[in-house]
Amino acid sequence: MKPIVKYIEHKPAEHTDRATAWIARVWQSASGKTLYFNDMALKRCSGGDDNHYDLVTGERYWVSGVKKRGSNRHWGGGTILIEQSLAK
Image 1: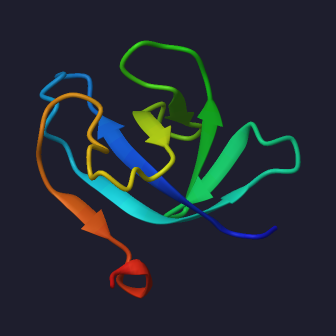
Image 2: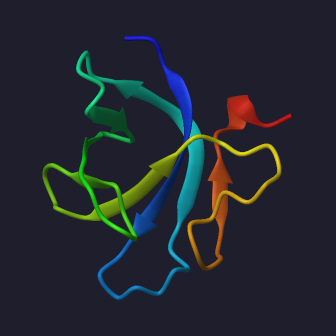
């Protein structure tokens, strides 16, 4: 599997919209429906606030491509952690 760069935002049940987010490399399954990131398997799903869930914990996540204009947050604000090897 070849890594791809994605924006991943945790969407906790409390709907605070200030949860941790990452810009990092992820690995995609052959079908493209599961992403592997930080020892998690994130399965694609449909939803308004989230589009992936952790197969083990059920926690919800918003995953998208990285936007050059910097508007990656899917509502809300908070810290975005950038993988060190991707920071310029």
